[in-house]
Image (cartoon, rainbow, N blue to C red):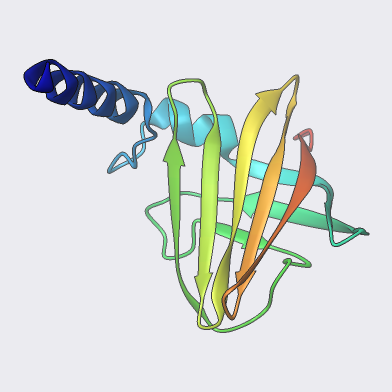
Length: 136
């Protein structure tokens, strides 16, 4: 019985790992094209709605994204991004005092999802919605 329980725990752990998101290095051309461009929308956190714009460039440059009106300001230490098998895109900016992370799922011509902000050990969760601007 004990061996059976250990085997089940190992199988559950492997299944969870197989469904987790990965940080491909480098991103595929298809993945970059899915998120690159100019995005506009809003996020709501702590009951306050804020309009913002996200410009997603190429991961080959030092800054993959730039964000107007970020949910948290501070000295940037880096950023990470990853894709999940479901098409979800996760983007995180690390700052000296904490981080903020957008966890997005594609919806029509846009993205929507959860925003997590952690500042000085205090974590707050909100929502956001973005639409890609049309390129003329």
